[in-house]
Image (cartoon, rainbow, N blue to C red; front, side, top):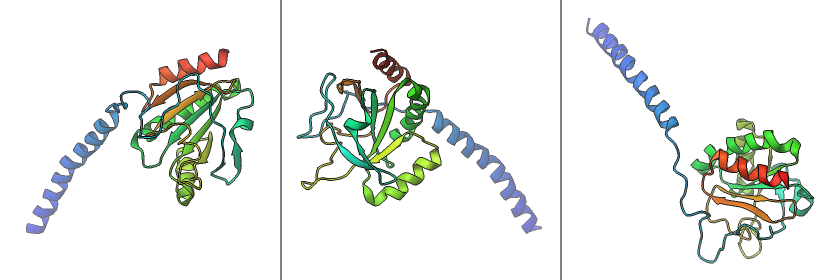
Length: 196
């Protein structure tokens, strides 16, 4: 009798708690993320690139170990550079937007390069995440130089993730944003660059 009462009590408790947890998760997922304010974040000694600046050239490897030379990659086509980390929660919300832009504009000539700042030791984790999420744009892994500086993120003045740069056909920064970017804002910037 006591066991039957205990089991019924557990079933009743779970029938109340489980839906509340599901609703709580659904509400948490619907909450909008607050973008970082103040534009591209600045770290002491690192100055973010501004619109109109020449995009620095670089050569680093992608997740497959293939070297990517930026100047060769962007030959006469605009490039969306996304600096991100697998540990960055806003990046996880941003990446589906990047994939959408890649799918929508690749035939028009847009190149998308996502530069992971997590480093070579986490290459397999990065690759696993990219495959799990179904991202089809090219993912690069930033490296440290002999001075301990990021080869790509530091010359671009990346002070936090996500950071996005849109580089036009002439190799100039046409759009720069630190923190989350609204899809409409990014779409407008890409449309503008593709028309030139």
